[in-house]
Length: 92
Image (spheres, rainbow, N blue to C red):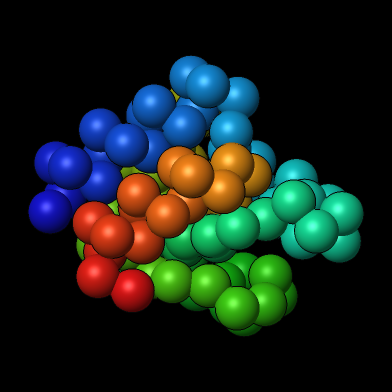
């Protein structure tokens, strides 16, 4: 599942359908453009600050590599169809 999740998260990023980092995620949520919010397994308290989310089995470093950063704790998917595919992969 981790490889499949990684593949689809990378696709979301390349398609411009992902907001990364707490501020960008909160902005997407406020604009009602967040269809799925995911956190790193080691996100800590930041995960609770963004509201409803699903914890992944990726670390902050692994999630960051997918988003072009050193680390990121949280990412939200802003495309409904891609979010549905990720939910399917995550069984949620």
